[in-house]
Length: 362
Image (tube, rainbow, N blue to C red; front, side, top):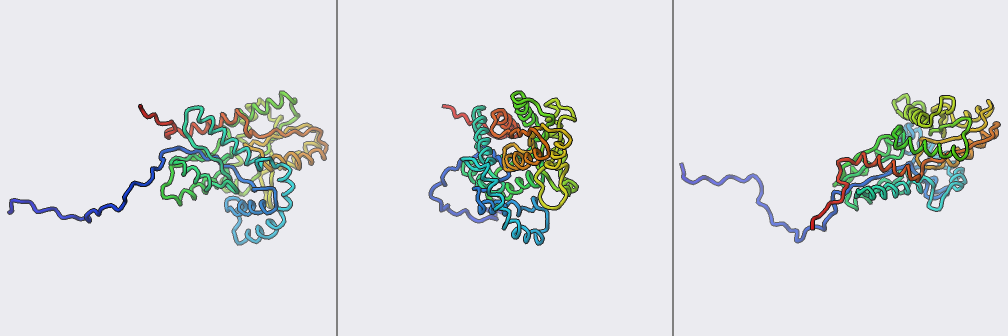
């Protein structure tokens, strides 16, 4: 036996000298981002812009749950050929200087949350996006990535959960992230339909409106509709909507006779959640309920469905049926109390992430 040990065999190659002459440019890491997402909007009140928006929106299989072979000819035929032109005057009637109300208010909400988070000592980047249209989720995530955000909280701005709204935001955020080599840590707010952060500011806004203008005979809570089949397949949107209505009525101290839940924005021949808003209000007027207020608790920002469908189409139908007073109470939009409450909701879901600015001694 030899007195000297044999050298151990190497099972890996000898390291080669690095060809890298310098380190890559430093990358800001560890930052936290918040992404506020709403449904979407055309870029302009024109037929071509509306057509682009509708094509993207109505091509989502979570929105239209019809086999593509059946749906595609309908979408690219009568819908995209005729509907955009019919919507031009409706969008034009609500358009604001900064774009559609939905986009303007969503951006203001993002700016407000960013400001309040900073006032509370958090170092967080906040971006706004539209699920369909611009700014896209991809653009917003790229913006947060460029700012070094390795943690992203996504807030779908839908109080109630539905597959065609909240779930499709989650789908798109994760799809965009799936193409990144350096993926962020991700969290999502699923719903906030009975959260006091939402119910209390909305109830306060209604009470302020009544303190100035008096109370109606009945408060109508109109939610966006959904095909009945979606509920039958397990979508919780209908349940969420009624729970929102109950929480809001309780906060306002309303009896069951003082408020009513309806559903608006039907599309196509299939059965949707009932009672439908417009025919229900026509029936109310015929029965002598001639003074109503309408609020839309399924929206946190005003849009075509609230500012045109409710305040023009539904109002005209109600008044023509014998109504005497129709008042629409706006969504929370950029109300300071809502911005403060939304920021608190965001703070709660950011717990455990590095949102405080690092203190460097000296």
